[in-house]
Length: 489
Image (cartoon, rainbow, N blue to C red):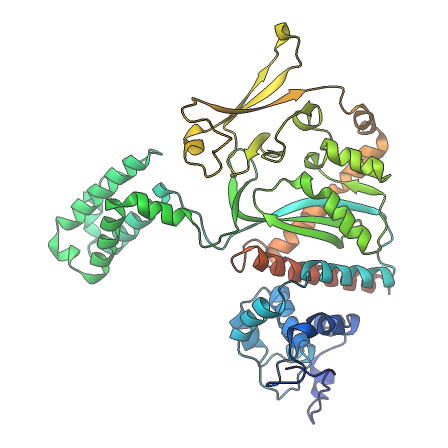
């Protein structure tokens, strides 16, 4: 249970903090800046107030998560450091002699206490409240973009899985007898799984040809694994393709590069404070979340009149939305999207980096073709071609791919007069000047990834990614607010 009142720490050693935690310490400054009682208010309903053992104060548990994000440490490491780091204990409202929590309780706190409280919006809203109160946010301009986070689990293809297992066996053999390197066949350079299977058969034969090496436990274990995979590779591969991260999806950065994980769609003020965010699976299109980001910002009480983004945000629906709400959209038109009309928009989304469409299964088109259609009295169109081998086994093929079809395509019609107003606006000096400030959000994305562990998901599932996003954004916003406050002094 938790008490209805916050506890007050009494200790004969409390004065130590005045000596060892200086005034300019970041954690001291955050503690003085933020009234964390809002966490207690949100989580009271998750605890019993009058029965059971006393729980670790929820504010302290949340602060542990915040420390974990600020310093990019594991649960075990952050708890271990809180045993001896006085700035940590001070920030956690602990007496110097107090014992620390068990690291396993952080996992329980995340799963049992933080569900269904809208932590992402709650924490961003709190930082905006502080920034507005301190008169830090003065502009009415936001910059929008998305950043991707890879799943902590890799999505291996059948070929990659076979390669991984055969490599593991070879390495075990080399540790015993390095001279066997010359006996193994050349590695397969083909993309075909069958060729990789043949290579694995040859590797197995080479190892079994030397009974002494093959009988060594470390080699024998890996040999048996490879033999089992080869014998029933189809079943093994289908199991591997069902990742242990059920919510992660394949997203595309360019036509040649992809990732397996999540996207965080971000809006940031001109002062570089994140004002709204939406966490989605990796295949989602950036432009689809502009309106939701704007509505989240307006719900915080912040006023905006200008939105800056790349070409992903210049969809027809976004242009209509900003006009309706009397906002400026600094987003350059893309001819494939803004000049065209297309059907089944909810099933095919445009990837502006690759210049290709992606189906709802996450598969990207492999090529495109421009068709004039002059003799048909029709506007020209662009046809996108998909890999039918993927379509044949796709779980969404019903109603999308016709059995026996030799190709799967998706087309958009080009209409060059669709967005005349935006075309004129993007040629103005104001548009070009504001567009130059979009780089600021790229730097913010880099900070999230390289300083606060946002490059890779800490846990599986969309809920875990939302918690990670909430604490990471809260941390970078507080750091930015402190920096701007210090510059004002």
